[in-house]
Length: 368
Image 1 (cartoon, rainbow, N blue to C red):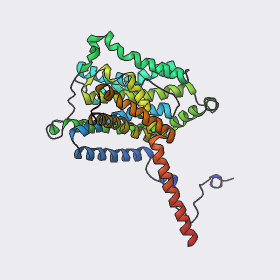
Image 2: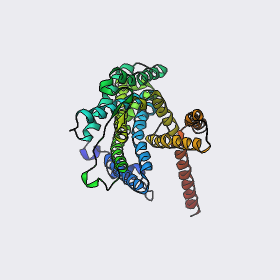
Image 3: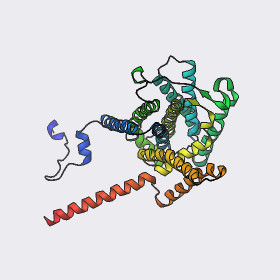
Image 4: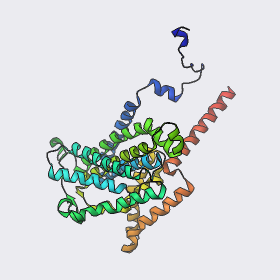
């Protein structure tokens, strides 16, 4: 048999039928370039939004940014790999204090190097935690990560001279170019830096989740025995998930420290770790889009609850607990009514619109 006859070619689509979306993607840009293009569009949208809003809203937009990357990393670990972590606040703690210590003690380093080292510090902590927790499942894994969230912030009391004790560390990052000082407000510039960093990290996460690592994570989540029989190293995959997820949390902590100019243990309590997981469930576990909706809900729901408590003049004790109570109520309702979270609602609406369009096109073809 000749070489020409042994080659197989993909069948051409029937005449009159439009090419499928997968065929268009194969002929178009590579996934990385396409995702970078969408990231650029999203960054321009953020820039436009910050130009139209006041500095306080810019601060909230920046806050959504660093919570987005923290929750997206948690989504990769929990939603894609099935490992429940209640200690992601501890990884954010590591990233924040890494940036603070580098700014204070090594001021000559560029800020992007500080963020990179904060990400590496979070990844190393994730490697250690993942290696220790690789054989744990379910509540045992959750308990181990919860112990990390409880114990790690207490290290500041052990080394108060280095870590500032309960007051934490305060610093200032001079990252704004001289040409923009006095022209662009500080909070707006910080929002731009945070979102540019977060969107680049999200491009990496999207490509990882849709590549070989993402398929391995889902296989291990669905059936560890079947994944092992298919040649996937289960323990190594779990550790990789922890490394990527904790690196995202470390980056988020570094960006938070950059925005607030401080790193304090009170910002990384157990409540933060629990709230990150609850926000992920609210936004939608099985997609990185769910992390986006979760970050918005995480920031604005608490703000709206506080505004409502102030509007009705509730007592201080009630007002302080109202955001948490309302957040829990909404989370329970969403789980019962929309198990897929906020992103699941949008997915259903999109599917319904596509179904109605396809049915209407079928009717028109039948009439013709």
